[in-house]
Image (tube, rainbow, N blue to C red; front, side, top):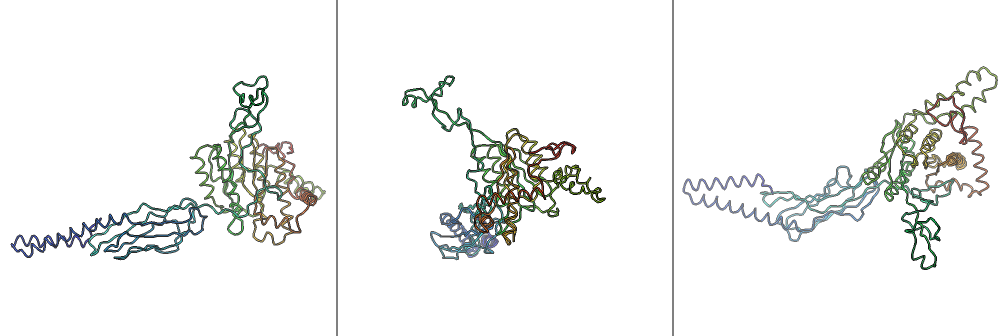
Length: 514
């Protein structure tokens, strides 16, 4: 409770009357000063009693929804219900965070003297991912006559979790077929003293007696052993591409939004199994985030927050600037071997791979994968989330990631299914998708590499079913045609680097096939 200027002015008047009454032995002035003092005290006691009544009243802010997407409005209700009417006014402010956007400029509700109930509704949207705290309500009170005022905070508040927009109709699979098993789950093909029951088999010489299943032995009248599936942990690192091309999409759903959902699945899997999890993110200027794989909530929650808030960066690189691999350079050099002066001049530029090595070292994704690879132990899982804009860089980054002896999972967003106007010509879109599919399949043919497509399911169906669903023979014929075109005009998917599959080695080494 705070005394206002009016209170202190009244106190000064009462004191003056009292002093003058005593000095002048004037009972009228003395009685006036005492009366004012008693009146002030009575108002103060009444105000304090009212505050206790107000504290027991229903002053709250609430919502029916606890989870919303970024930019999605959530309806908030602010209400004030008093047990008894007050002789002065009360205003209730819901306390909205500065980051949130409110549909009302000032969603405060006011109770005039004598009123007992009031409520209002308004909408709040948040452009940021995270927990949005609304409240607790702030109650401002000013006593009748303006002698006292105060501000109290109630204990009720509404918390809304703001999540990234989940892409609709998400498809994850291979060649238009959806993935049947869950990505991120653990699989073990060995048995031993684990936790999950696997099978019951007959006792064999050399088995430990402690592993005998006595119930099965009594039931089958012969010693039996119960096997358990061995539990494993996977050191996993997510490499997330958020360069400018990842911002392409329709209906506010970009490539990055779709791949973000895949990243969340791996975070949830790591949390469930207690796996060490790391994160490396790639922007147009290079690596933007580095987190070594560690286990525990102190690792999972920050990574989840980084994934939720990551946005595409800006690029100054001209479109279509993918590197020319040595195999493609040799192919072009052979076409220049026509005996002409121009061919003789240009051929050395296509035969050398030095420029390729130098440019590859400068590419953001490859540099980031090199950094992640240097910090991983043997047998780690590398999960790459990117698109098909730079196929050569993606291929060489995957080759580098395989060297720790672990698995590489690649989730690719086919650009044709995200570009505005990409499906205007379905025949052309189908040809582009086949080219992408051959690129994806060539990655999947690598040892210890699995490659999947991530796309809007409805747009993928529209491309595949352009003239009705193709038969398996038609699909095989089209993929083979795309493969020939890919090898003729692009990089041969079955060939590696011309210098021993090591982009950091000298460019004069021998050729290595995948």
